[in-house]
Length: 193
Image (cartoon, rainbow, N blue to C red; front, side):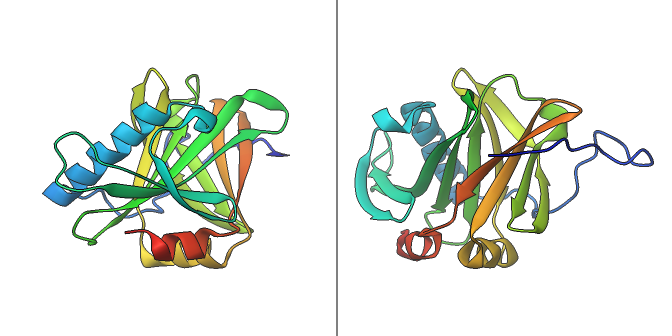
C-alpha cells in the first residue's frame, strides 16, 4: 500500500487539475460505451466478488467480463480489476477499461468509494511517471466515477508499466495511493473487443 500526502504547490490553484487526459467524446458510440460502463458499474457495485457478467478470460490480475446491456444490439466487454487498500477495507477501486462500439475511443473509468474529495480529482501514476488527474463526472450510491478517454501514450504506459497507482483524496492533505498491478493488462487490452 502506497500512502503519501499529496499537497498542491502554494502558487497553484489547489483545485486545478493537471491536464493529463484528452477531452471527453460526445459521439453516439461514446454514449453507448458510457451506458455500458454505467451498467457495469451499477451491476458490479463495489464488490467484484459478486460481479455480474460472464468472465470470458483472465489475464494476470485482469478479467474480461461481457454482458449484453438492455437495448444494446450485441454483447459488450470490459477489462476490469477490483482492489482495496491494504490497510483500509473501506477504500477500494473498480477499474473498467472498454472500447467504444466503433473502436474509435478507449475509455478508462474508475469507481471510487463515496466520501472522496471531488475537487481534487483522481490522481494516476504509472510506476514513476505522474500521468496527472482526472475529474469526477458523477456519483452514484455505489461510489464516485472518474473517467477519461485513453490516448496512445497512456495505453503504452499501462502496457509497459508494472503498477498503476490511483490516488484518491479524503482531505486536501491526505492522498491515498492504491496500487493496481498491471500484470496481464497488455494481453487483456489486446483481446478486448
